[in-house]
Length: 256
Image (tube, rainbow, N blue to C red; front, side):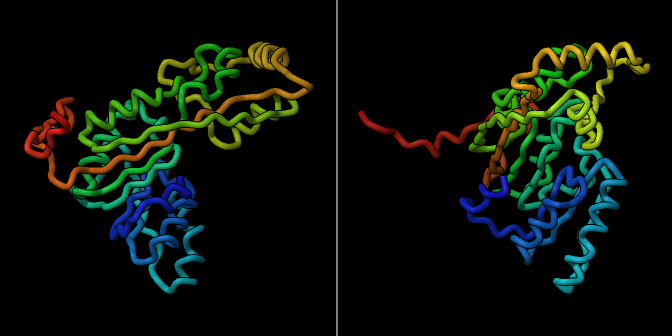
């Protein structure tokens, strides 16, 4: 997603890193657009503290104040309408109960002509683990549904694509340990609240082991990329009503 900025002519005055985590992307954005104000937003206060700590040395080097950090929910952004020129959201939307609500909020706080760029996990992510442990792994949104959500939220010219990355591990223990260490654990509301127990864990490892190829276990990550613009002239009606208003005077007749 960072590389795709090379093909876009942007001079954003205000940027929101929505779901900034430990702030790595926010640092990149500050370096790339030195004249811009970058605000990092995350639901986790601990992540924001880590982001501010990482940002300290960069602010000292550049001789300016540190990144502004806001602890809030993507479904209820604490900002006024048309507050940002660019919204950047890297692997955050799929954590929402309803990612479409996040896109509606992005549209609300973007200025006319503003841009949203995001990635999220697609439906084939951890497919192997989902088959080995039914009901304990998230089901991620499909790329085509996300494109529809962008249109319904009122965005223009949405562009969607995806890629699949396969990662292999020497054994089930390493796979599960890495998922836990990176925070990629189940947050399903309908998931079991009790401990699975040794029997469940042993059965899971056994099922994963049967999928080994040449002694290694492979898992899939489907990365969905998207970006879209806000129209220079705001559309009539609410962005959440699912209706797109088209100005027919802007259409040109082609051919006989």
